[in-house]
Image 1 (cartoon, rainbow, N blue to C red):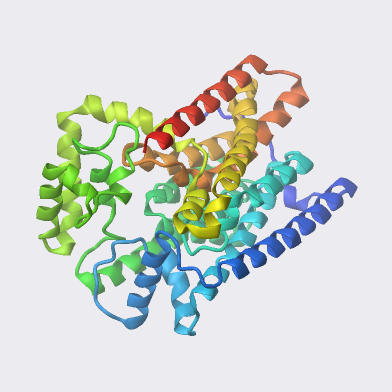
Image 2: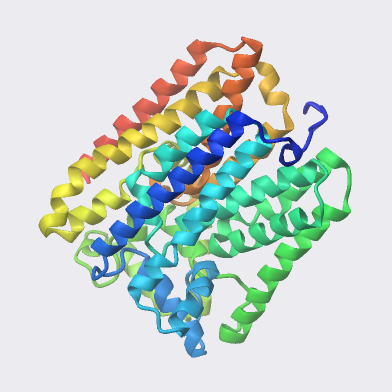
Length: 456
């Protein structure tokens, strides 16, 4: 950490708002109004459509919590706890969908807030935010009760609060950092290491122990309060029960080398697909016969046993998982095709638009991060963003990977790219060949991703 540049940082939120900044806030307001309009229109279109994918599971968990019944929580609780009061008020599926709009607003506010903290080019940042906001996948996640949008919003808020705490901000930012990281860990328990690492980075920047510890303590209280609830519900001391199963789905002798997410969404007990894997089916049936509280630990044991037996296959799948993680999102297009009828005709346009929007923002980030000069990597802000991106992605790189999992870290990646561009432009340094090489690698990742999509 000594190598990180120790330059003084003037708090960006204390700086005067100049004419260019006022123009940017006007553009931001227009973006929000246009975004609300298109999302309300989409809500009208899907008013009577059933919830998609994991949404039904989070709704079911919220109903179980509302009913006060004992159960073993398979899914993480953060989103279901948010949905619970809406169901208590008699909210329909349409209201559950509409309840995700505040998360999109928090996502946009967190993006602009962090961009201002980093003091990056506002016009470029807003342009990239506009592209993100009207990407079909992001519109879809704004009106579907799933964890992608809350995770993305909470991560941006946590990063902004960490930056401000490191710049000498007061107690409200400490509370925001701890609260955001605590809730993020309940929405996506794989993000739990960030609750320790981000405050630790603040400590290394400020050399003050109290505020980082308060943030960790607040997040810890939120997490342990839920763990206490789980113990009351099921007798377990855990956040949820799916992590062991996810690890095994991505690390067993029958896991595809590239499509490591396969058993997470296919070949379930009772399906025709699982009959293609009789040994796998036998193991899944045996684990299913165990008490619910023991299944996660057994799956974890089986995964660890296989990884130790075949570390070479684990390494190969991990390399494949990293590449797959950076493919473009197909969630919305796949749901349109699955819906059939008139919705299916939108599959190809949405598929292509999702791919194009992702390639623009990710290509921008990959180019400038790779082209950035060496001094860029000595900045504390860079370590903050890179650390958050890598730590968030790491659990998916060792279990099961799919492009849908990269959604929460795309916005920090984009802002890292803007920061790299500003550094290269201001110092007139960097290597464009590295940037184009990174874009070429990203393009090859997409080609590989499309190839395997056509084979599935």
